[in-house]
Image (cartoon, rainbow, N blue to C red; front, side):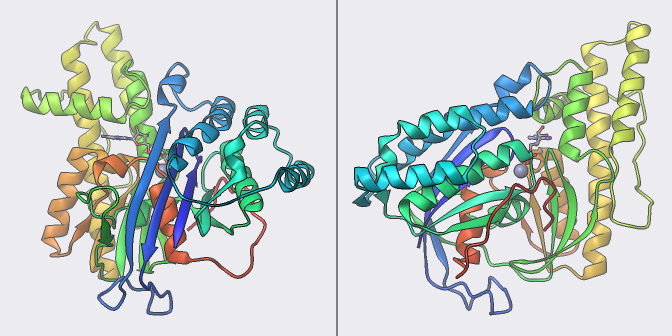
Length: 403
Ligand code: KG4
Ligand code: ZN
């Protein structure tokens, strides 16, 4: 099966083409074990990040993101389909008829997408794909709609089914791809034992999820306010660093460690001792804000201060994540630990969770760092695992879609 993945849930416009073979049976205990012979091959995966554009606003500006997705999708599609086999060509008449039907059906409210589609001759060539997988949520609704409408247009023009995908399931499954397999080569997914525990940490989410099989998820706890990535981004802003701030804060923390800087301030470890799996990072960010305002007043807002507070902030985050994850592993007797989402690129978090998994003698599955951020490869892969359902259901953007 060949699948085109589409991802527009936030500020990355992403497309991917993958091919799969073999069996993955959801009936087989939903397991990814030795019994399945599922394999996949990445034909191509393209991510167009808009981070630089949003940087000026200190965060993602939804209407700008929506416009950019509308502009980016057709050029990315042209790039990914360049040299890819065509099944057949749509006649001018059929193309015109389907386009006018689509225009009636889909209110694009996106002049950029509408304009680029109207003039895209490449849409007349039907590529040899079997399905399209598109992120339906969670994410920013205006940007999700761009991907969904684009998928519907392609699906209708090319007569292929569209599979709606949960972005967070993408982050889970993305961790099961082997990292060092070159494009075009076949690979099995990593074998994983259930129940597994997933810690999903991104710009919009912080969740601990019990996994009993692919497609069988239960959220054990989540953030009550800011997501971890959001807290990193806000702290970056307080310290005058560009968006997205996670990598910059983490870099400062690393420098502090290398230079032996000891943080002068002790920050809170929010909800560390709460008897549940929920998180809260908004108070931690506010504590950084107050400490920084004080440092500025006292003229102590130096490079050394920034490094120290970045390190203390990162330590507080790591401690809370590690402690809650450890308790959840114990409670559900997890056989594997999966960490996914953009923040999983953080080296301190990777190290500490690695040690935690070792302590419980369970394997840790992390996405390779180049696919820890948002991408369409993970979306296409979830599509392949779920397969094409007989009935096509109407899709709608679901900003707060749950696993
Ligand atoms: O999963 P993702 O790409 O997008 C969402 O679905 O939100 O995650 C993006 C988030 C941003 O908040 C970014 O600052 C954070 O991941 N991030 C990091 C690091 N790299 C990315 N946070 C901490 N340390 C990093 N190295
Ligand atoms: Zn994400």
